[in-house]
Length: 154
Image (spheres, rainbow, N blue to C red):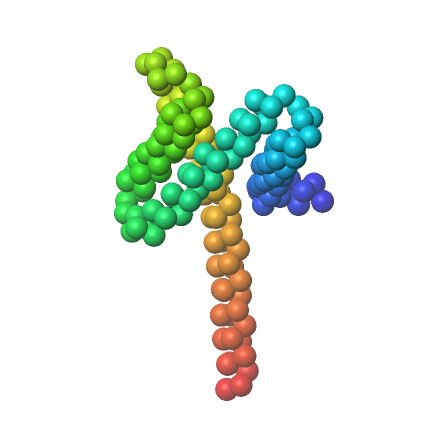
């Protein structure tokens, strides 16, 4: 029982559920608070700004993924980091004014965005790998079933 509870699939689902639910709660609470003022407005506007930046990153990656699909992994990673940097510095830094463009702060922001990029990349990779493995197992089982049916009919 414990083995099933703490399997890699269960842990990944838990992490994804926590991240998705946190994101949805943050968006909903921030959106509602714009009208009812439960919390300090600046905190909630930052949450909505984070959502805007993350959404911009996701859309740009969705657009570029088919274009770079057959490229080498290092190039995909560099393009991904450039997309994140464009959104963080463009939307976050310039449009939303999250930080002044000073050398030390730029270095700190680059460190944070690279760290977040690789952590997100690893989680998404693990989930997609697990899904791929599950699908492949199902396909292998179906092939075996078809072969068994063919052998029985002969």
